[in-house]
Picture: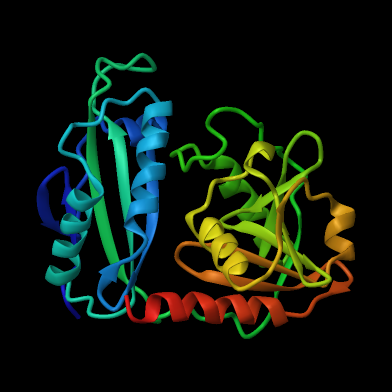
Length: 283
């Protein structure tokens, strides 16, 4: 098996031991932001949209990004790791931007460091799950809507607790709600429901993550004549839906087979998954 490599702020290292320095603020305080990126045919895809969200999130966190950061800068660093780690087909990548070390809750600086890691993935293109996911609603914690809600910050403890709770209930995933009871997303994905051939997904103003795959699914659906509405999604809408599917940058689309006693189809999910693979197959 090939050695997998990481890039720690410009230093390329084998991923075989400790690679993050002591005092890293992401490790100590969750003071960072990240993006998960899919690799297809040995290339990182959708970099521009990931970079846009990454830089917007860093700005919200009052981080000062160097002028040499760009989508092309990170694309080339990722490609270097892909080639060096010998990942010729499917893979996944994570880019982290962390505030530089120093200080406690009040940082000594707003300068940043970056960390990139790559891993092989079991499939090259996106694959629809053969068995539908079983889901429910997570009730122990609510996601608060604020200026951080749409970004992938390192403060992920609510998602961790919800994922553990799903496992304890022998479920595949749980849905996160806001303080008004609106359903936002799952522990790792954005949410779409299908009713009478129309797609509905929580709007960003509800507090859901501004997922890059969410954006692409919306665009692909519209391009193929499928209506999409961004709106509040309530538990009764879940029960009335014909289909439910979840989307994220790594897995693409995962269809839901059941919510409590309700069962669902996957016709639209299969159709959009096909659109997705058609789009990236010759990337």
